[in-house]
Image (tube, rainbow, N blue to C red; front, top):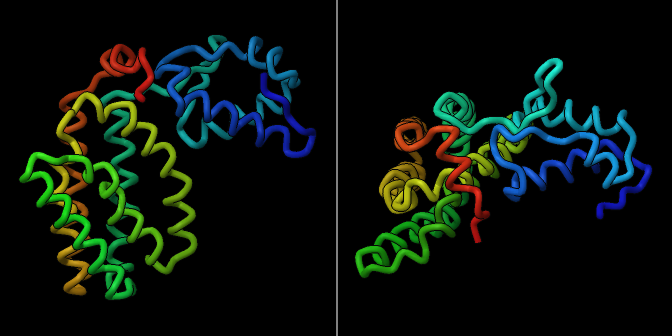
Length: 229
């Protein structure tokens, strides 16, 4: 049972509910039994309502008048909307980051992708998941714009939740994306900011197309009935 301090109670409830959603204990489209959670966590309606409002703004839940609170759906439309955000934010971030990334760090990340590519040719895909986020994190860290970083951070949990929910449906997702990541990092290492932004846009648009092709809300619910290990 969750136990909350009085300080920042709504924030604690928000984080706890988010953990339930991201952890897969509640499925996309599932109704959240507010009364049960309030009783189990011993919190009143006000902090719970504030937490729900915050999660609605972040995109994790939807609130339907006279019906209740639901985990946000993961379907082709929501995936497209999430990728609209990613394309706008991450293309800007990588373009700004490209001239700022220390040379040694850029080379290290680029080499990590090349190593993953070599391993894949030998039938070893163990490096793919660990390298998948590297270029995106590089752009985030080095974009040099605190407001942009904050915007990226605020959406990153939602993006990762959606990806976690659907990546199992596209079993080769990491391997398919690898040459796209390599293209981005090649441009970064060459200090080609516009080229890096173009490569990022191409990667994200292809990712959106791949995921939208393989997804429907019902499919997500069926595939995630057993939480991933």
